[in-house]
Length: 279
Image 1 (cartoon, rainbow, N blue to C red):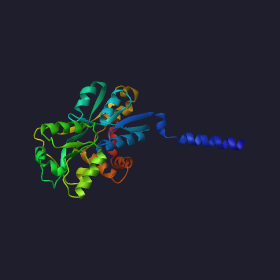
Image 2: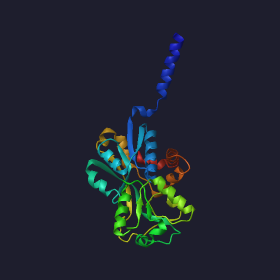
Image 3: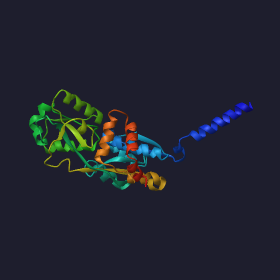
Image 4: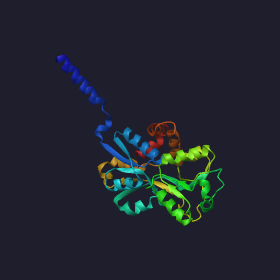
């Protein structure tokens, strides 16, 4: 009996010592939308925070829920605020209820895109070529800012014969892939950074009325009180920033592995950038 108790005590001690360090630092919850660049940035931040000793839970939601959940304090923050255009309505409604930490990626862009082989170069040209595209614009999740802008673009350019098809980022790229493999015309809601621009020859359609705006940036947003509750987490989120090239690299790797594995690979290959975020 004494021998058994000794074994149990040693086992319990071993398990205690083997527990992940994050148990002492607490939990972090982050929201994200299933957009390629936001999946990439969220998984990179998650991996870094876990290396720092936190238990991180990432939650896939709609763009509206991402902002509202942070404003309500249900999550600690997110890295996918597209500003000043795409998420302008969310910022206007909830900007005073969250903390916008700053830009984490510059040079972002949204619009409508088609394969290079399509002989249409601008959004106004779509009106006379609706039948070529099966009278549809292939979109993503209905709550996304780019979908709202596309509805406005359809009004501005009199695309009455078109219907915008709501789906998801994954379904949009799957449709794009299928149409390209069959050399057929297709128009999709598009944004940069996105791995599809590295995978296929695509072009943005010219937007003379600037419905989609000029170049955008992606910002990190935190809930109020995070700085006081978890200053180390707040500091990392505030310092997090990377380039289009960095983001697109992780997105490309994700096509052949999981987002978590791609994120860890990038972190391993970019220790100096990660170290700067922790200062």
